[in-house]
Length: 271
Image (cartoon, rainbow, N blue to C red; front, side, top):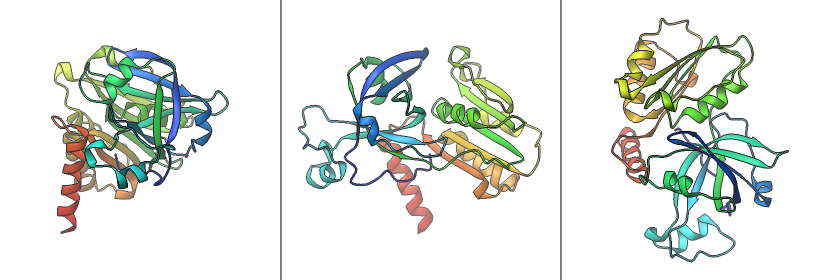
C-alpha cells in the first residue's frame, strides 16, 4: 500500500474490542469502540488505514502511550510492532470502528491476535492515513486485489454511485473465502481461487479494455502487483496519477522484512 504517514507524536487511539465475527474461514472482523474513539479522526479515503500497535510482551511503556517518545527512548527490540489495516467502516453514531483481519492459524502477529481477541481487549491504533477513493468522474474503475486488499475494495464499491462502471478482480484461496459485496455501481465482479491455480494478473490482462479514462486500485501480493504495474503503465499507457498501486505484502516475507526490502528498492531507485 502507498501509505501516507501516520500522525507523529500521536499518543494513539486506545479502543476496546466490542465483538468479533468470523466472516469466512480465514477472515475475522473486529468491531472496536469505547471512549477512545473520540480521538479517531476519519478521512475521506476508502483505503483509509490505521497502524495496529502490538506491545512487546513484558515491556513496560510510559503513560500516556506515545510512539515517538518510545522510539526515541527504547531499544529497537523493545519498540512495539505495527501492522497496517484498512478501516473497513467507521460509524460515529454507533461508536464503532471495524477492521477485518486475515488469519492463518498461529502464523504472523495480527492474525493470531484477532483469532484470540475477546470483548474488552485493548486495541491500540495510530492514524488513519490513506490515498485512494474512487474518482466520481472516471470513465470506469478497475479494482484488483487479494484478501489483504479486499476490505478497501469492498469499501470502495460501497461508495460508488449507481451507473458507475467497475471491473473487479479478487483472488482468494477458494470459494469459501468469497464475501458478499454491496454496491450500487454497475460492477462486474470476478472471484479467482488459488486452489485452482488462478492467475490474477492474467485475468486482468484478458479483460477487453473498456476505455482510456480508467481509475485503478491495484493492491496485494507484490508479485502480481509488479506485473500489473508494467501492464498498466507500459502496455496500456495509463497515467500514474490514475492508479493507486502497491504491494501490501510479499510471499515468504514477514512485514518487517518486506518493509526493509521496499525501502532498499526505493533507495536504489533514487541512486
